[in-house]
Image 1 (cartoon, rainbow, N blue to C red):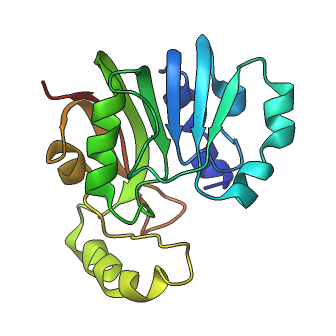
Image 2: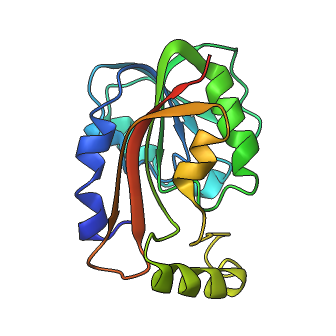
Length: 187
């Protein structure tokens, strides 16, 4: 998701978070330049190799960053300890996204928000069929990426109420259907 067309969404999405933030799928730190008003950032990333690519960006940032070398299915933070959780193009490759979403709900404060931009199952049946056909093969060489996950359904069925969502096809890639939004934990 380093393509210029995808990058245009980062400032808007990342700019929505503040306070104590957990970024799920921190990767190489591509979101760091866009954080504003963040007291502390927990950088959850199971791949130490990817995280190591972020070291220069972290050094250039004024935000205190704490690395959590683990998966989103077992977040090592206390209940209701973060203001925002951010996920940018991560849920396609989390092995058990349902568990990860329940964990995110657990660590969010009651007034907290889950901010996301993800790619997933297209609303256009032709593209959705292609996604469903190629995902069993493509996920084996794309880091476990599932093109056909219904992101909205996953979020709604696993501890969240969607407050706002935009769904749209990216012009640069016909199989890239995006879900961008904000969700709040169900009480």
